[in-house]
Length: 155
Ligand SMILES: CC(C)(COP(=O)(O)OP(=O)(O)OC[C@H]1O[C@@H](n2cnc3c(N)ncnc32)[C@H](O)[C@@H]1OP(=O)(O)O)[C@@H](O)C(=O)NCCC(=O)NCCS
Image (tube, rainbow, N blue to C red; front, side, top):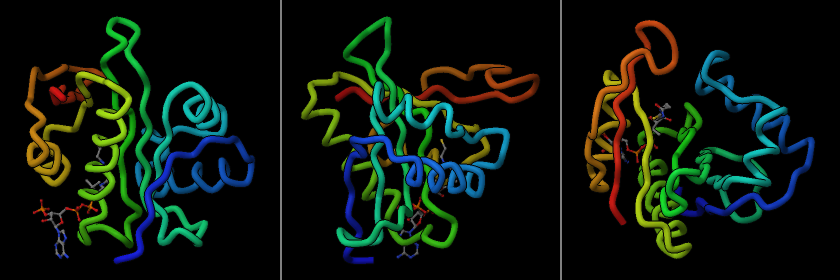
């Protein structure tokens, strides 16, 4: 996977939105995925960074969706982060997260927050490798019994 190309999606195109919607369901399940009513909002008002197979390919194999905090405009929140099932364990998650951090540093953000399922060891380890620290366990964050670890990286 030497040619993986990472870029920000800047425009809303319904075919692309539909493709991302399917990728969301496939990789996060129908409960956690966002749909065509939300994807354009994040593209236009947040940040939507994707990994493609190559610069010339339109195949998206990784997604990172971000919003900016209202409480502190120097804080970005990673709403979703995933790599398509068939492309995991090849270093693409690491590559995408590294690029996301570079983009946010460049935009003068001072910290990044995200939440992760406490049982999700692969994702938690990846975040720790980049210096994210666990701040608190948010109990019942996404429903009864659906707890999340809040993690934060100071930039
Ligand atoms: C978490 C996630 C994004 C990681 O993406 P990824 O592309 O598989 O990540 P990487 O390949 O960079 O690294 C992950 C693991 O693969 C290993 N790896 C990387 N390159 C490898 C290679 N060439 N061969 C074997 N293993 C490799 C890494 O060491 C790491 O190992 P670990 O599981 O022991 O920590 C991915 O598993 C995913 O999308 N999961 C579902 C959604 C999710 O949980 N998202 C996070 C929500 S907060």
